[in-house]
Length: 267
Image 1 (cartoon, helix red, strand yellow):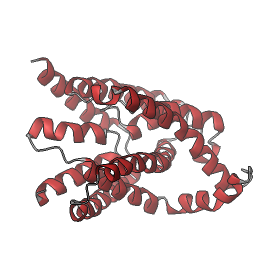
Image 2 (tube, rainbow, N blue to C red):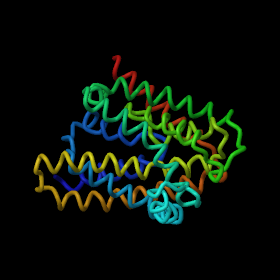
Image 3 (spheres, one colour):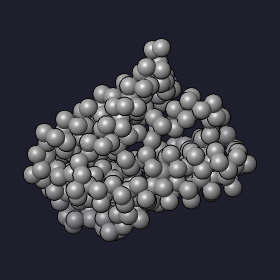
C-alpha cells in the first residue's frame, strides 16, 4: 500500500474521530470521491488503535481512575469515583454493541455505506448539534453523570452507527440536551469512545485474524502512528477551543459537506 495512501487514511481517521464530523463517513467517502482503493480491515484496525491510544493518553487521569475501579466493579461495588465511572462507561456502551451486532448480522451496516446516506446524516445531525448546543442549558458537569444520563447518551451513540452521523457529534448532542457544559459534554463523549473503539477494534481484529492477512503489519504500524498523532492534535485543539468557541464551526462544515454530497448524489 503506498505510503501516501496510508498517511491519508490515518490522518483522516485521526483528525475526524474526535471532532463532531464523522470519521467513518470521511473514510467511506475517500475511495468514492478519489478513486483510491479501499484501505482494508487491517488498516482500519490500525487507525482505530492509534486513536484509542490518543484518547487514553489525553484523558489518562480519568482512564487510570476507571481502570483502578474495575476490580471493585467486578465485585459488584461502584462505591468509588473510579468504579462508578467504569460502571457508567459500561452502561453507555451496551446500546452501541447490541445494535451494532444486529446491523452486522442483518447486513444493514453495509447497506448504509452510501454517499446519499452520508449526505443526509451530515446535514441533519449537524443541524441537530447546532440546536442542542445553542438551546441546551449548561447546568451539569461531568461529575454529575448518572446512570440515566449514561444510558441516554449510549442510545444517542448507537445512532452513530449510521455513517456520517459522527459518534462524538451525536454523543455531544445528547450531553448538551441533558444540560452538560460544552467542555464536559466533550469530555464524557471522549471517555465513551474508549470502550466503543476497543469493541470495534476487537471485532475488526477478529475479522482480520480469520482472514489471515498478515502481509500489511508494517503498513498497519505506520498507520497507527500517524493516526495517533493526528488524533492527539485534533483532540487537544478541540478541547482548548471549546473554552471560547461553540460547536458552530463544525456544524457549518457538516452542513456544507452534506449539501455538496447530496448535490453529487442526486445529480
